[in-house]
Image 1 (tube, rainbow, N blue to C red):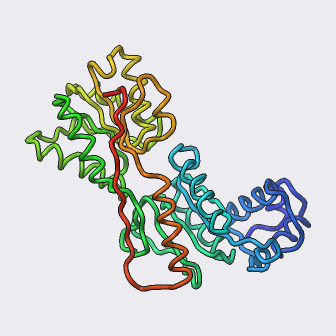
Image 2 (cartoon, rainbow, N blue to C red):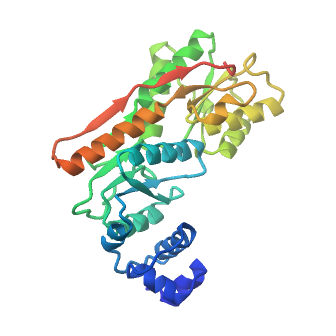
Image 3 (tube, rainbow, N blue to C red):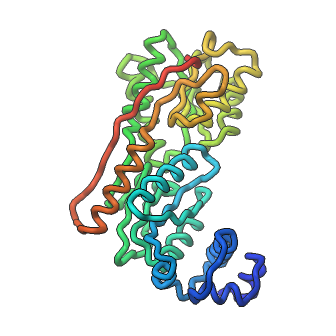
Amino acid sequence: MATLNEIAKRAQVSVSTVSKFINNKGRFSPATEERIKEALVFFNYYGKETRSKKKVLNLNMIGLIIPDIENPFFSSLTKTLEMVFFRYGYSILLCNTESNLELESNFLQYLNNKGLDGLVLVPANSAERTLPFFATTPIILLDRRIDGLDFPFVSVNNYKGAQMAVSYLLQLGKKNIAFISTNKNNSASRERFNGYQSELSKHGVNLCEGLIVEGDFSYQSGYKAIDQLLENGEKFDAVFASNDLMALGAMERLKEKGFGIPEEVGIIGFDDIWLSKIVHPPLTTVRQPLHELCKTAAEILLSIKNKPTHQKIEKILEPELTIRGSC
C-alpha cells in the first residue's frame, strides 16, 4: 500500500492534509479534495472513509461513474444528473473511468467507503464482472448494461434508434450504407449494430462486411474510419455512425476528400450532442431524451433507496430522429 507521503506528493498537498482528509477532519477546497481523491484511487488506498464527513457537510451524496467526461454526451449527462438530483436535495460525486475497467473497479471500491445514498453507474463496457458489495447503497445502471447482472437499468432504445436511422437513409434512396461501429463488448453498441443489420435485412439489403469499420466513440476514430472505408474499396453513399462524435469526424474527413455532404454521402449520428447543431452542414442524428433519461434514473434510484425491492426494474425510452442538413 502506498504511503501518505506518496499520496501527498501526487496530490500536491502536505502529509498532514492527506491524513486529515482520510480521517474526516477539517475542510478542503473542491480542487484539493479532488486531487486527494484522485491520488487515493491511483494508489488504490482506502482509509477511514466513513459517513461522518457527509454528516458534517450536511450533504446527501449520489455517486456517478461515467466512462468519458470529454465526450459531450457524457458531460451533458453529468450536468443534467447534477441538476435533477439537486432538485431532490442531493449532490453528485463524479468519477471518470476513461473506459478503463481497472480504474472503474478502483472507483467502485473507493465509493463503497463513502456512505453514499446511491450510485449511478455508466459502465466502461458490458463485460460480465463482479461489482463490490454495496450493503446499503442502491445502484442503477444507465445507458449500458453489465452482462450477467440484474441491476435496475435505464436506457434509450438503441436498437430502434439504429433502425430509424437506416430506414430514413433507405427512404432517401441510399443503397450502400456504411456503419462506423464500436467495440461490441458494450450493450449500446451491440444494439445499434443489430438495429442497423436488422433494418438492412428487412429491406432486402445484404450486409457488406467491407462497409463496417470499428471506431472507439471518438472524433478521431470517425475521421480514420473514412480512410478505412475508402481503402476497403466498397462504394458507399451514406454513413451511419454509432455516435455523433464519430459522425462528425467522418464528415470532416469526407469533406477533406472532396465528397459533397449530403449530395454524395449522407451522414447520420446518434446522441444529438450540442456540437451536432453547429457544424456545417448540421448533423442529422438519433436523439437521446437526455433529461428524461436522467430524471427516470434519479426517480428509480431514490425509489429503491426508500423502498428496496427485488423486482427487476428496467426502463427503455424512445429515441427520436432529428433531421438536419447532413442527409
